[in-house]
Amino acid sequence: MIGYVCIGALDSAASGKFYDAVLGCVGYKRTSDDGGWIGWNADDDTCGVYVCPPYDKKPARAGNGMMLAFRAKTQDAVRAAHAAALKNGGTDEGAPGPRPADSKDYYGAYMRDPVGNKICVYWKP
Image 1: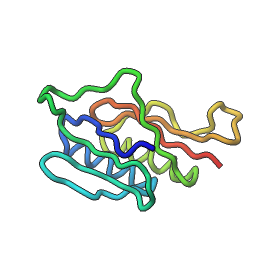
Image 2: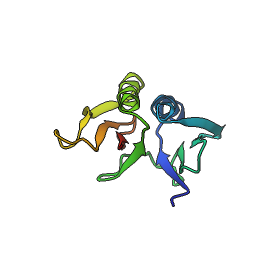
Image 3: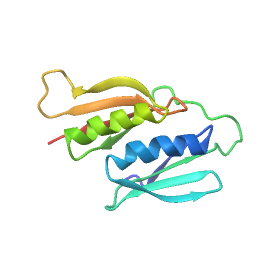
Image 4: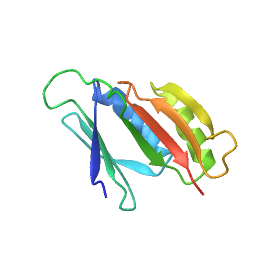
């Protein structure tokens, strides 16, 4: 099991606002905010998520081919997360819907955070 993930931020406050909105839709809550490090956890034993400036002091940039996926409890939560992302500095990478188009067991949405990191919020029955 992954313990936590770190996502590089150019502006921790802007990334924090984005992830507050998106992760809040799938059950995460902000649990820390200290020195540019902002963290979220769910009530269960789910992997923690942190945004922070890169350790090497160079500007954060999106990882080509890197994507984090967060499981939602409902399709409504997927739609809410996608809408929240777009309202909080994110960009669309794939509107909410079944993947593939006729799927009955996968529903996802894809977006990019303020730095350009790709994330997915998905539901599976």
